Length: 421
Image (cartoon, rainbow, N blue to C red; front, top):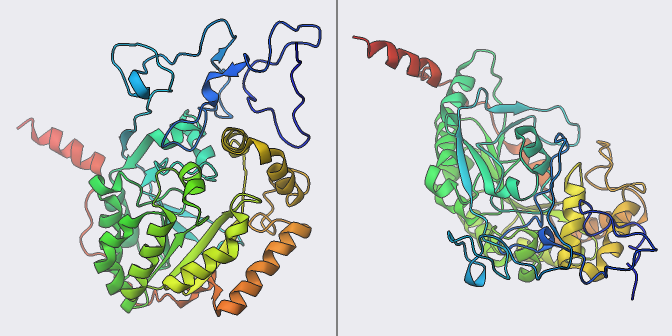
């Protein structure tokens, strides 16, 4: 009976949270029987498992010991949700849950030397786009949730974000500067269609004359062209559209609920035709997965109307590393070791190095080669780096809001006191 194969050097076991394989003298199980339930990719989701956060002390994982065929509880015919508790051959569909949050603050400030902005704003926690590589996934650990499937299915909406922004802009201590919206999670993810928090935030920035920068993978940004075009005419708005690859099949597994690559190219064209400066963000560049498309993405984006371009090498901080490894094993098992070895070549032998000087580009021969390819393509296409667009924005036209709403909690207290009369 065959023994368990050893995993290639430089790549973790495909099921890092599962129990360890039996010892060499225990030949009662085979790799075919040792199947991890959670390792089945879910349709429309990026993460493969609900990997526990780094602050959790207990981990629970289901696995099949080979005694019975794998059946998924709660899955009906064809993998559909079922209230009857029956099993199925497909994993159950994962529903999205949105929780409302009354936030205490809304503007985040950073002094990172490798970022072109110092102020950012995120109306949502978690992101339904489900991009498996998202550097924001570890932030879900702070909420006691998983950076895996929880990050893309258990979302939080900061419903008082517009009121907080108004109060922030009205403070005498506020110094007008570009606010980047949606840098942590996409401000135009699917729940924005109903909640419209990003729209309300943009309206405030438009009315106050405060510059804004946006980055998205969604076509929903076209809804707000009326505001963005008016701000762009005053040199107060720029946008970036992220395109990782032109291969729709890879994009479907890598960023399952984002717009297709062809649709994002159409977004670039629409924004450019409206007079809004738009750039393409090729992020992340994943060796042997999206890396071959680098020049083709640049060419297609420039043809669509992008004026600038930028790229970022794949980053794997904290829990993103095991989640990405699981994704590789689920979708590209034949090249998983090769991809991870190349990533480690660019990170000094590690999965990730957070040094400000190198975290966006990496180091070594392969990082230098990517940089040369990008620079030569930029020169050939006549474009500049997208980060330079921030210097073109004008904050001198800022006007402080005259009317500022009371904090929501205070308004609720006042309402309760009036009820007494």
